[in-house]
Length: 371
Image 1: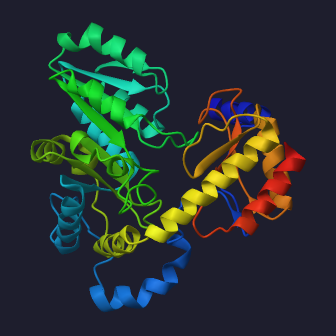
Image 2: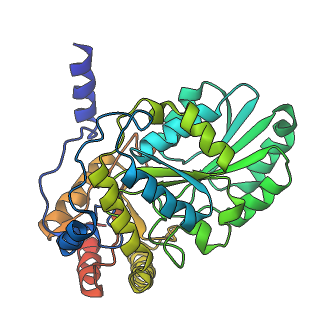
């Protein structure tokens, strides 16, 4: 069987994946950046007092659903926070595949950073429209593409992430906004999945931190990472909101998130926006850890966030490093092709405000023996 042959090849190339057992060491794997996920038991009683017992199933897509109270309430909260119209969807993957595929209509060009997330790539591919890519964070290449092609299209979408999920570096949002402003037909689309909760005074993301929220046309936010919930939302103008509601197939044809999940999301966002001290702590820990890592490796760390890669150079080496760390009581999983390009295999370390300097000193000590 051809599928068996593919699995065999993956195994031979050290790329065969499996769902890990429950882990118990220092957590450098999850996206629980603000520690809300591991503190969920603290909020159960408050949740029950405030929300009672919301339904555990929506039983239909949002357009057919009878019980909308929790969904409408959360969207109103998010509208106020972001100053945009928001539309809840089932996941970050649903948000990107639905939004980008629906935007790719005739007369539209989507220009994307080469290192955008797989969900964004899939959304662009599903649209079957015209596309172009620019080298990662290379604004000169982006300008050349727009100068050459923008006038030939009714609409151009620049698509990027704010914090990149594998390298932890950030997009130059200020330059992107300035470039966008030169063209009357260009919109800027930014996925804030790994910035929400971590950046900004209220944790709304890198757009908030840079003061550019109003200048970004479409913002994608995931609620299953720092917000310790589930789902995602698309924040945009009223016209685009109505467009996605009517044209994003992942929204139209998916059963809506259960009301009890949406109520939990609302509570977690309330907690998240007030966690200024935790954001400050995470930033300081991340800066210290990156500096220590540079001392070990002798290489400049490109990360500017809580996501910090430790490059291995091969799938075999990445697995070996992860295994040795686990033996030291540290949970870190290898990242391999196709998630990253061949030769750039790595450990992707995700720091959390729940960690402390002693934890990270243990990690640094262990990394010295596996580098």
